[in-house]
Image (cartoon, rainbow, N blue to C red; front, side):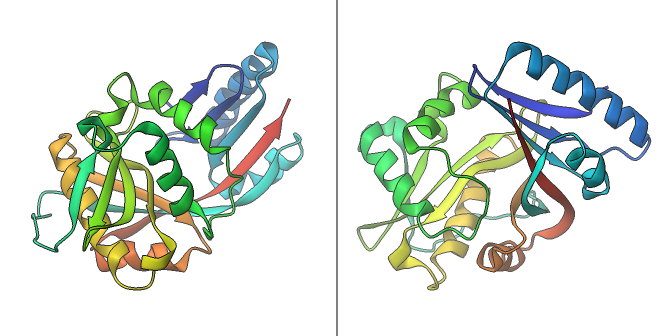
Length: 236
């Protein structure tokens, strides 16, 4: 039984996300997590970042995890998400209209001033992790958006590891001078439409509990609150 999704980036880090299931005991989650931690320590990986229900917080803090923040998860069935004409032009990096370096600069711009409290990785590390986490065709997932001929934001739609139809956004962001103007709602809606092209049937998105702007975008686009988890980190 898969109780955790794990993304492993060579010797740098592991990203571990608890898969909540109603019929699984707390003891089973702890036992499986201990196995993961033991392997992580044995392999001397840089750090481990964990998304887990906050009921386990005391147990985690006693074992040298530090709490970074808390996130909320929202979800939406994609069946009724329709294509809309909102004057937003989208392109994937695979089209070759801009190069990887330009996309990295745009990614860095979009994440500047973010309300999310999770520690930012250097942009070069983020870009190198895309192929590791999304596969050889990673550029087909990297979208950027233009409105009135100018860059408006980016999103990276993909199917969640270990599932066949759970749509996620590896990242979603709006350039600073377009924030607060409804552009984020438009890009997010188009991103959910793109997820359908990747054969997703439902969407799951998450953000920091303090990111009220992103929470409003979820709600305006018909997403419903599904869960809340803590973000914890341990360093070798």
